[in-house]
Image (cartoon, rainbow over all chains, first blue to last red; front, side):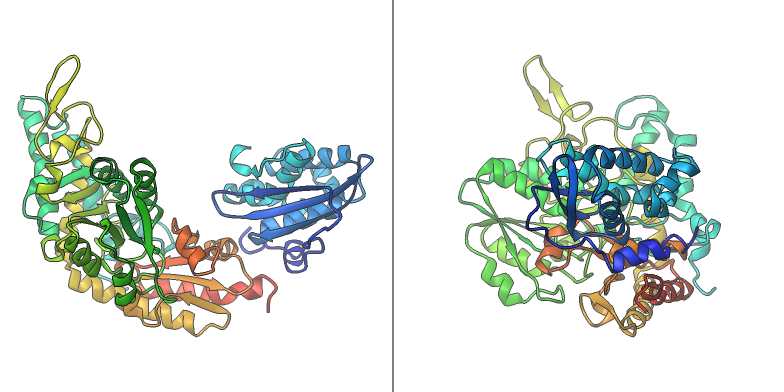
Length: 149
Length: 403
């Protein structure tokens, strides 16, 4: 696993995050933090008629937290809210090491993070974006923190 | 391998690891590990209680450890040495006991911006509860302190000053002597956080005229869970207990109690006898090695690491330009790579460093940095450890796709 963990998919999303910018017409905004390591993102979504029309994130964090948030937005933009929730549950299941190869396949590029299940120190980095989205879609307005997952 | 001490550290023999996180916790020599074990095999009874021989021996070992700490710090008396769990508990003891009983609204506490959270949060608590104000003196960009800034930060309302002897981020010396002198002019007290200094240089509490000084055993080759608070007897005698309970009393009635003499009135509950035994062995080990040799080895390794890092493009070391200013602590940034990723890549190359804000968030914020990676050196490290570290750091940007 050594050194190969930072694979091309992660490096590319970290270097060139497509969704890292402000979203002026967003109608949902929530901050998410990893208190133990200081990762801090602001997730913004534009949701209309139960569909995620657009999304973005801003903030500061390690390559894993940044790439994971960018990959997530790639996957959920254009999808119904219920589908985003389903993918998020699947992602968390993968991070906990409980996904079948078929399920990992379904997570597309997010499957590049499956090795995180063997790296307890980085789990919170990987789930920050996803957890923030879940909290947001559940209607919570308080800053999301991975400490209370 | 030329380092004469390395072989004494079982973990470093067992594992192929360049351990550069000694500022977080040190490794332990076999003599310390054996001393703690031997305590349980040979002396174990509850110290300061039983009247049977074994309990007396346990008490005697415990008090001999206190005497070893007294000599280590050159304190005037052993009753000025209080065993705690760690530096954090030592500072909290002073905040809850001294500060809450002595500070009033309008008084000021002055600390430096370089402090570890354990030398900030207790004073925030004291400020909240007493109405005293918590103020800061700010460092230069390299983490050092301008005496004029220290002088200007003092008012005649400062009743307590506190500073780290060595910063756990920049490695710079804090303005301990100057703050001590200035706070004493006001009739106030000075607390020195020696957590990062005690393992690396000789300290003399009488010479520095500190009123309180705290350090942790676990950063000084000793077991986790044993720490020290030194306090001047005249001050400690005038302070209410911090924790209350077993074996810190003189007599207890239904509604009130009188308390034991120093230092036992500050050591409520069963003490860490084996930890004290380990700390005594750790001090013995350091005395045997000699601070002169410890300092020389650490300086040479720091020079190697600092010049290696300085030669790398896109790497910036936080703090002074010379190795002598760092005291074995090198926090650094790799441009374009988050410190957690730096630390993860170093880990893949079996190099252990810390990443984050190192419990000094206000300093990072003041310096305009969110977080950093920190390598910290001890005398049991080798030039090979440093070479492995530098080799790995030099590969990071390439591995992260930054060429």
